[in-house]
Image (cartoon, rainbow, N blue to C red; front, side, top):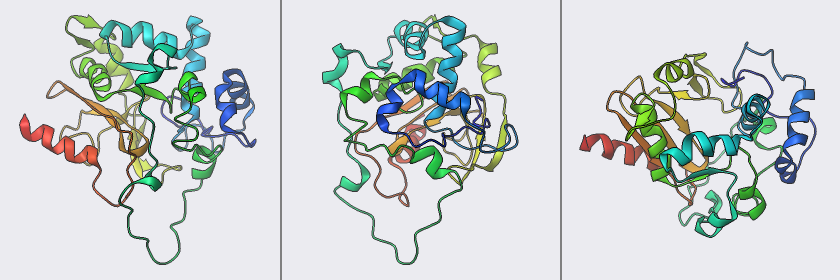
Length: 271
């Protein structure tokens, strides 16, 4: 389940963005969903549903929502500016998202047929289709707990959390997880195989993406997760650094070198 092998990357029933705000409805839909592939036999990015799967596990064990648990155990102790389910007191601090189709510079339009989407792309990412401004910049979206898709943070908050993970679970004398807990989370469950949702090879651990092809710097031990539009965060245990990049202008040209990669190269050039 944690390594995106559960086969429930989306639901067969047609849903709307508003349904994502209804936690009980989503977990019941997932509980009733026949897996799209045999669990454990393949991997596909559970882009939206992963948060409900992990979050419901936490809720049944602790009685807390994932957002509350994360705030109590991770964000608050570290004083990290990161929320899953944004409180009203923070609403006026959030920048609206600018979708890639509204970027100042658009990539040149390619000729010929559009590339074929991977088999489960539409199930995982287009049911429902989430508009950057119309949906993801709304009050209802920011208030909800859609843990795989609507964390609200800045780069410093992301880097602060990954900085703790890069230093064995502790930073500035504050421990959020044991070293053995990190080791358990980083067990490779999926090798460098093709992801059935995004169509590219990806190494996965238990919630984290494991570094490959320098996406998280030069260290093979680095781990983290990338986000929509080009945002990213990761931990590098070899250099003991956490890196965070957040933006509101989403990447417009998928063929261009990501801004996060340019910043990453500059960071390592400084070490």
